[in-house]
Length: 151
Image 1 (tube, rainbow, N blue to C red):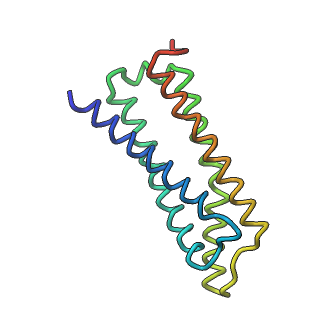
Image 2: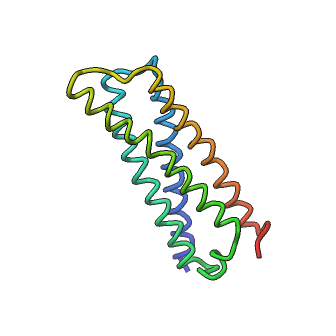
């Protein structure tokens, strides 16, 4: 009886965490604000963002498996496939910023140099794309929960 609401709660917390940390990255990743502390903070935020995304995936899968509607219902719904596809696309886009943050931190530690303005702008653009794509996942979730376009 409590499993369904607890799974939903855990999933919501994971989703909110993803939103908080991608927003934090977007706010900090600006060439005019770039300094040593920001480079280090971006690397830490990105690691937390990764863990939050994994938690969102795990709790989402748990909801499809142990949730009230069950595995058979969820995995036959096109909207769930849209959500998962968006999640994967966002994950693939996040690879470049992650690698950049790691490289920036290593460069900072080795030489004290900050990243170039053009690279910061490019990475910020990718973060913003992720953040904007992320907004469509809850839309698909709301439609799915309300039975819109379900089979």
